[in-house]
Image 1 (cartoon, rainbow, N blue to C red):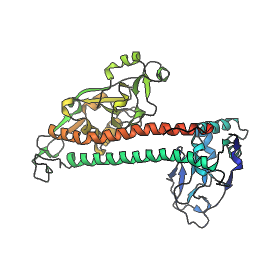
Image 2: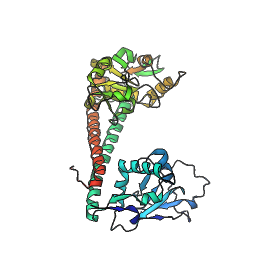
Image 3: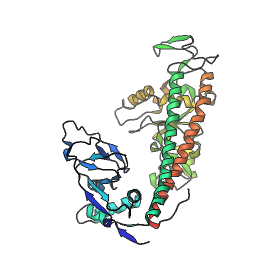
Length: 415
């Protein structure tokens, strides 16, 4: 299939918000999506801002040389929006020849961002501008074929979105159950009734300065864990990483209640043996202990095991008989614990950091074992579903990348 110049299909649009009817001000993100503008527009004259109608594009040529990407968005929000006067708005001349959604797929390709970045360096004008955009060559198949490609990509995108919504609902349910049982103390008593509101015995705790259920104790993580420790980066740094092998978990992989597989590093058996003291096991908790992501916490997914952690991640392994893994996860990601951990991390004279000693001394309100066991049983299935959905999304995201990379060759990708 022959390639055609994009300039044959697009034209600039310059409609200003003169009547001030549109107040929805949007910015452009590096992920090629609109983001709600955080600018203070009180007292700002919005009449000079540009209108982006449904099906039109807007882009930021000035940022390409700085971020090495081409920030461009197709307005599919269902309403007209306004953007900064510094941005450029354009549209497709004839949608019977080129679909906006198909063109947006072309813009999403990582190869396109590299092309735009390359043209920045090579352009005598010192950047990627309208003229360079019009010189872009792309395959333009029939409208029917374009729609087929768009539909295939959209099916994958919709499935990813549904999985994300499932995860959000399951996480919200888990957090609500944790609060109901262990903050409001309404866990089921022996008769299956809410403990506190059913007259369950409450004992004043001097350390917490509040009443807690009878039989509950305040303990340090060091008392209830068989292992707390962080690792190191193998000699040679990133250059020593392998394409596959033993997983090396870094802070970028650890988010609250979520393990992010992007940029998961791998090391060989020899490197892994040197980190044998931080060998990760099923149900281990992972918590970031340095930098801007300090105190983020999740449970390791079984898919990444065998694994080790580097010096920015600490593993926490409760005694198995405690049934405390998911309870600790919900506790450490709660607002109260997060504030304490962040305070600890900022108390030192250097950058934000939490030490092994800080983790070992961290105080936890420990319920009786029967409540922990019941909570673990209730919550484990939810997190298995969350993990399955995120694993599927990882594969679907890879499929999206394949679809985009193969646009140039117009190859189909099996679902």
